[in-house]
Image 1: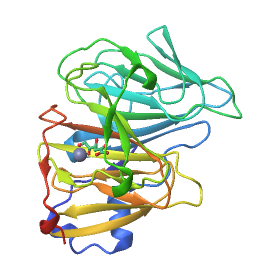
Image 2: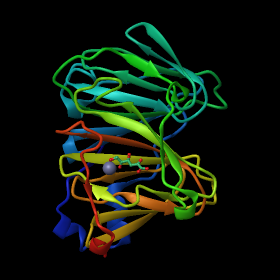
Image 3: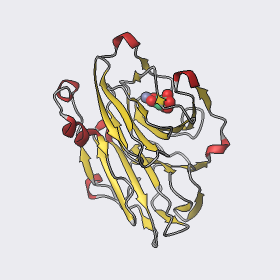
Length: 276
Ligand SMILES: O=C(O)C(=O)C[C@H](O)C(=O)CO
Ligand SMILES: [Zn+2]
């Protein structure tokens, strides 16, 4: 499991492009036939990609966790961003279409991931955080929700935000997770921007054309930086950092947070005049 340490905002100011990418960007999450896991010290979250092809993949316990099994002290939100497949949780099978979301709580021992087609595999995006209590396994599909209509075509940020794991949805200890879909012609996400010192966040960009690029913004509001990202790449946002971006075409992104306040609306909005 790859490890990423927490960073101090004063240190991040000194990073060049490569250092910024090493600390915050997750370039390749989905590798055919493999599990890729990144342990971030930001709220002790784990970001992962599981891409089963011919054989099913079992989510193994990891030596770094010093646990008997992966979810001994953790919970996980799983969103399939690839083709259809199945996830089996302690013998119970869940069919997973693209953009279906499965929450698996602390204490579930055996997670097995498979794809319906080896040549067009499912791609399971995982976001895990420490958990103190067991919550039931639950599955939802994107079309179970209407979503919140945000932005406007005039501001190039017309989008539908869907909360899946949150206070009034699937219950969890720490995880808040969902996705935002940008309408054609709209390219800006999360503007006006915000921070939330109470929790970290990860954005995974999907449905982005192969030749399109995302210019993801991060940093303290008065000291911003950007990362150029491609489809299916993820970026870690420390609690003190803004997180927003604009791409050269529309896209979808999965957002996932963990920390001490699960209220989605707990955000410190940044005034445009503060941005530098
Ligand atoms: O489009 C948006 O705005 C978002 O999706 C914002 C994220 O959900 C977020 O950053 C929540 O804290
Ligand atoms: Zn946020």
